[in-house]
Image (cartoon, rainbow, N blue to C red; front, side):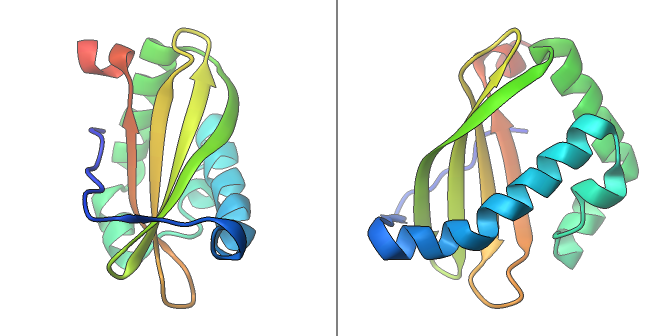
Length: 130
């Protein structure tokens, strides 16, 4: 749950950014809705094979528990940046929770279709305290 480094990444803007967000935003909604509902199947809908292996149902339950315990209730999200790095796009979100209104979530997506989630990190001052 540590923040991923995105050195060497290129920030996307305009139509390039919009094109990525056209599929990234629905994927993010499904992922967060599944996380909040405790529904692993929904949460992992768009995961690639390595994500399914690395973030299985037990890891999902642990992640959910950690977020609830240390951050409280989810409140909102906003897009901070859309980046391109090698074979991936990275969407950086700012999430607001009850106990921390500055949580960074990095969603890493494959460039090739079908676009799949191949990385997910959460970072915040509250999570680093644990």
